[in-house]
Length: 357
Image 1 (cartoon, rainbow, N blue to C red):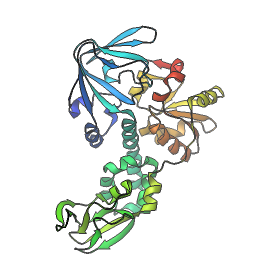
Image 2 (image 1 turned 135 degrees about the horizontal axis):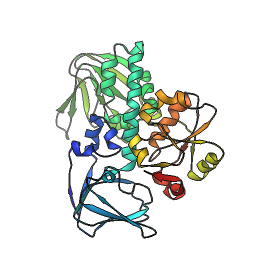
Image 3 (image 1 turned 90 degrees about the vertical axis):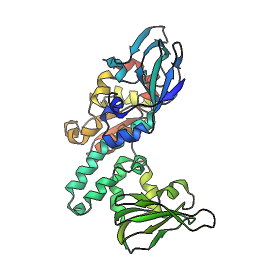
């Protein structure tokens, strides 16, 4: 089995990857794992739990389910635009009928970036609509492209901006020192910073320049280790400071009502409505019987169409997008339950309720 890589244009043919913006596609390209198999090789087996989303790039694959029923998927077919046997545990064994290449992504990471990317539009709308951000919109929107935000629950993003405190600094001011304990992080709002690293007893060596809209100091907060570099103001400027306690709090998920499949099915029997927050392409491929499709990126705009007297069960692939949806709908006054682990983790319990296009 050999490894290679693919380009962005090919990545954009896959569902739901095709829903990502250009910046997030670039990030996802760095996460890819492309593998090549020989004829007869098994890509995965019935019952596997690998938390991996797999797309067929070339060749032909045979899928055999528990009953022995088989179907084939060929690269270029509409079926190959979707993940191969996406549910976990795997409901079939996949075997290469020819030379085959596939691209793999961590399912949770993919759903996380989808959740964040589709929520960012709401954040930008809020920033543009709030007159208090009139002089800050440019750097705030640029900051949203930072990979650090992939770690932040989308519902907490605006709260980060609210908790940032502005501090003016002069050229030459040392902001953080290598080896010190970390108690905060910064965003560069105005000016330029120099990053330098000391090796042994040698003088600090400049290694990078930071420009407006960039984070620094967050790595030590995430790792709990001392600062790994010294950052100095290269010009006069303004820094936005976020204290450790705020940073830690904003990385935590908001409290939502999450239930396992057994309890969710009980709620559905009592009248709760299924709400699929995946993209329309994903929904058309496979969804729960009776579900309404309301993709996350349009959810806030369409939430007025939902009945406030009803309880809704939000679901996606892993639970990431549905957790964000639940937060948005909760703020709109709706009662929402989230399917814990999403469809991927509940294939065994929900298989009989799934319908395929």
